[in-house]
Length: 89
Image (cartoon, rainbow, N blue to C red):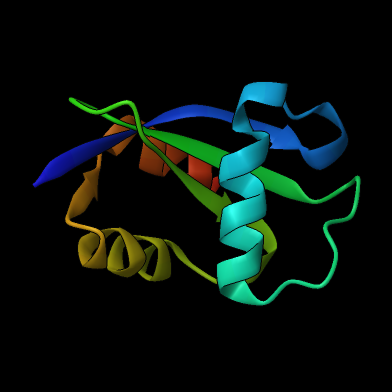
């Protein structure tokens, strides 16, 4: 199991260019027609890999939904990241 650590929380309009392909891919998977400039997006770095996991924060009602999604991706979120994400939900 991999550990997911918060890489950052950004509004779409402020998203660093390097994360763009990951965000577009996740939007396509979720069937999002549009990403708004004000959408808050969390980028989680997956330790031991060069990969990132994208969370559109408006999609989640609680931390358990995020934990479940990451468990399906064979990842676990560290405690510090959970506390920060909780403040944004």
